[in-house]
Image (cartoon, rainbow, N blue to C red; front, side, top):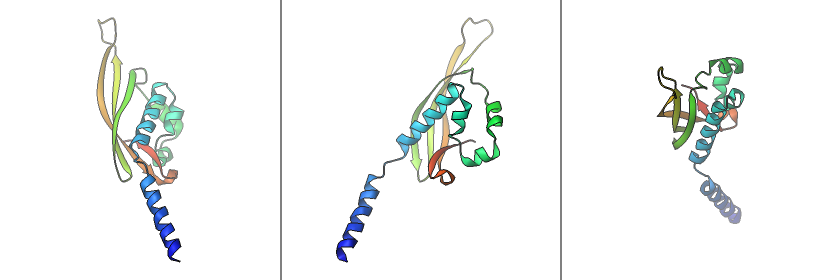
Length: 131
C-alpha cells in the first residue's frame, strides 16, 4: 500500500511542476483576437469573448458594433500579468486618422489594458472580458 501512496504523491508533484504559466497562452490569444479584428473578421474575433458576453450580445449585434476597423493600423500584445484565473494584458494599438489639410493620415499609438479570464463555462479556456 505504501508503494501506491508514493506513486500518487510523485504523480501529483509531476502534474504540479509541469503546469505552465498562463501568460504566453493569454498573450497569443489576445494577439489572435486583435488580428481577427484588424482583418475585419468579427466572426473569428467573437470566439474569444466570454460566454456571458456571447449570451447577451448576438453575433450580428457584435458585427454591427465594431467601429474603427478602418482606423486601426496595428495591435501588438506587449505583455500579460496573471493572477489566479484573471490576466491583465497590455496591447499597443495604432490608429491612423485623416486630418483636414494633410495629405497622409496621422498615426498615433496608445497602450490599452485588457482583462482576460479563465471561463469555466468554456471548459476553463481563457476569454476576453469586454468592459
